[in-house]
Length: 128
Image 1 (cartoon, rainbow, N blue to C red):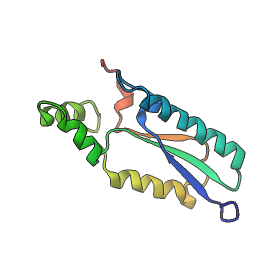
Image 2: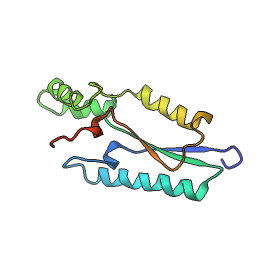
Image 3: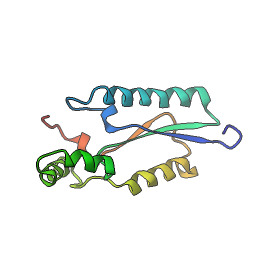
Image 4: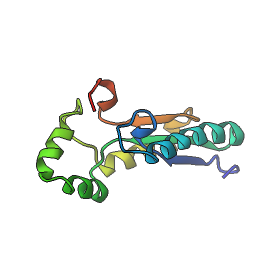
């Protein structure tokens, strides 16, 4: 990787920045990954860039399973969507596109940071 100016992208979660009740130890492990991103950038730079990406709600089978655990999955999905200023949840394609950008020469000045990709949810103070 050093010879080719490699890029490491670590996928974490928006729970690394803010969390809700009953998410321990998930949130703790995701927070640790943000520290790993910073440390690897320092230790392995300049030839290897290390970045983090912290998605929020993304339309995945895991999230579908979570929504399906509620008595009314559609009601819970609508409630969750309304917590986001963009009024939707993200897609796997959007996460992938961020990874492509960060790994490209266009993202070449970025290293040691974790990007929050949460549809604006973290911008709003919300009750749990």
